[in-house]
Structure formats: C-alpha cells, structure tokens
Length: 126
Image (cartoon, rainbow, N blue to C red):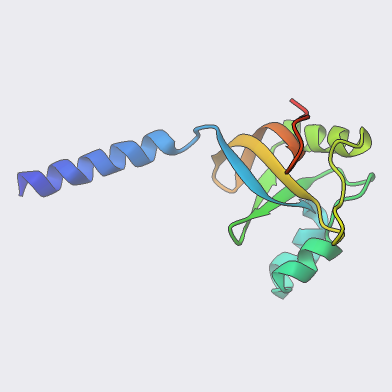
C-alpha cells in the first residue's frame, strides 16, 4: 500500500511541476475570433477550420491548433503573433494555413507565449 501511495504522490508532484513549464508547441495558427464564431460551436472539420480561420494582417487575437486541441494566446502572445505576421516572419504556406512553432507555458486553455516563429524558420519574435 505504501508503494502505491508513494508512486501516486510522485506522479502528482511531477504533473504539478510540468504545469506552467515552458515547452514548444507546433501547430496551426488561427484567428481566435473566427474560431470562436465558427469552429468551436459548429464542429467544423479541423482542416477546413484551419484554412478558413487562418490569421490575416488584421487579426488581433490568436490561437494555436495543436494535437487536435485549440489553445488561446495571452495578451502578450497576441501582440507577438500580430508583429510576426506584420513583419513577414510568420506567413501562410502552400496550403494557405499558417504552420508555427511557439515556446510558452500553458495555463488552463491559454498559452503564455514567449516566442513565435514559422515552423521551419530560425527567426522568432520574442
């Protein structure tokens, strides 16, 4: 019984430590307002939603679709993503979606973004 309790305690400690850690997320950048209006409630197919809700120069709120889940950006992350699009560091690919890699920490359904870049680029906005 002590072994099971010890393992459970160690697991919970590790899970708690991983929450809020900075990790890399890879996925499709979305216009969060478009997603909230169209994708979230209407169960739109993931690939169609990624293209129809691809961000533009006028997008002010962003999200990332990674591993089948959509996570919203924090305020600073929205500003970094907008700057990356405005400066041409993040742009759509051949299939009209925006493939990105971001570093950040997850807090509930929101990601506190530290940096954002095109998936295969070395240049990031911090």
